[in-house]
Image (cartoon, rainbow, N blue to C red; front, side, top):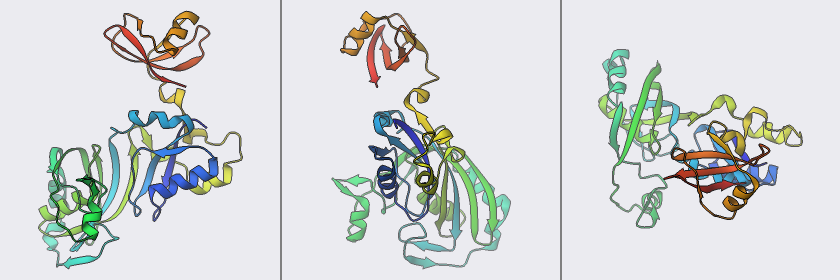
Length: 289
């Protein structure tokens, strides 16, 4: 199996746990393009076999989440797995729909966000959560993120459910705390479900149980599995004769007057070979399978 398998990550498993399980089940090399917190669920694209070569095409993807913010409590990790460090009464006036919608909309656009201390970001070669566990202070520099869309889904007592479409690198735990602050209180991320990564959606995702049940089926994967060729199917294509293809496969750049960009490479019979990139009328091999 060479390509991308879209998995619906269950709660209480790390992304590494999911990778290890799928690796054992498929007996393939497996990687992922970005982690989900153990308490989070949802879309986790896994790269299988030669599909691990696709990682650089996936790391910049934006994300869509459904999140639940619980108001009136603060935890040390900014989510439900942490220790409660503060409690306060929530002003009911701040739970009005129009107030919440106004606050949510104020986060639209580009902005600076300070990542949470309990995160895997490295500072001076050490992960932030390692500093946190040692009770050491460390300067955390803000990062630029962008919120493309944000929508209120429901209000249930002190819980606010919302959908957010955001750029890579956005921490929803931090966003929840920031929303709570603008509502005049404190809060933490109670639940998180990732429903989309780039073009990969929850509808395409398969559960670990389904993988285990169907792994012996020769048609395993179906809509859940995206081959390398299918991943690039929307790129323009070009066919090369045997001579030019041999040169390209040996690392020789070919002069081809086409627009700069990525292209599907096929042989003279139409067989898919891989992907090449053109820059300044020079075609170079990009990804050959």
